[in-house]
Image (tube, rainbow, N blue to C red; front, side, top):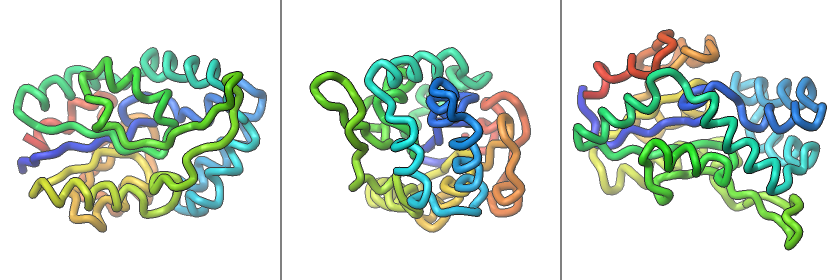
Length: 213
């Protein structure tokens, strides 16, 4: 199969970490926050029921967001850079669609050669001192169904689209007619294994290439 656009989740797909959980670990709140994240990714809780709660607990300042940006890069999934480069060489458009924090994901995207306007994620809002104030509550990616909304927008301009990800929110892309590739190389989720169009357990992201080119 061949696709015009390949979309990637970020956490546990392009990078081995779950960003919000690592911010929580830095604040000594890992177990509390990770349980909420896992419940949302497994479809046990809605994303909107945990999104604001986690950020209110952590209150990540600008320094924490910069720290996370470095960690995303340090923990990049095996084969991620080569995979994105191969797709770009084959004329594919690459987008990141993530419920993560946009300012932390942008440096990873830049390293991978993905333009800023192709990064769909949730902005954090800081005060003048760089302290956490809020997040972009209007963002579709902070609620259930958001990834389907972004995919629908992209499909208005492109005929075929694939979504690569590890969680329930990535499955939502199927509602927009996307071909969903479940990536279990970092975290295996039974719901994704059952409902994805194809499910891969390889540790390298390069395993997707035969399925999208």
